Amino acid sequence: METQRQRKIAGIIQQDLADILQRAVTDSGMGGVILSVTKVYVTTDLSIARVYVSVFPVKEAMPLLNGIMAAGPQIRHELARRTRHQLRRVPELAFFLDDSLEYIEQIEKSLKGGENPIENRDLLVRRKKS
Image (cartoon, rainbow, N blue to C red):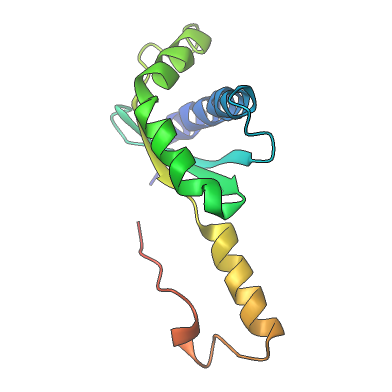
């Protein structure tokens, strides 16, 4: 069960990280890439934040996620600078790819093609529970 404090801190982190990452993508010259922070979960001790990132087009997702993870300390530093009046300590950031848009697209494609993914579950890739 997520507490009110966890939700509030996750919201602050999500808003600032979205701005930081979008600005970094724009500055790097990847103008056609859309990046959004879809969800942030903060642990109960507020030490780790799981950040879910959605990237469009999907083919750019893994290289971009690897670049974000490599620049993790700089991103955390920028986040600390922006939230210094709101957060005492900035949690460690763990980045994950949010594939929900791709999953929804696969469902729509299957339904339009006449194949029913509900009847034939092998049409869709299995998703892991996190």
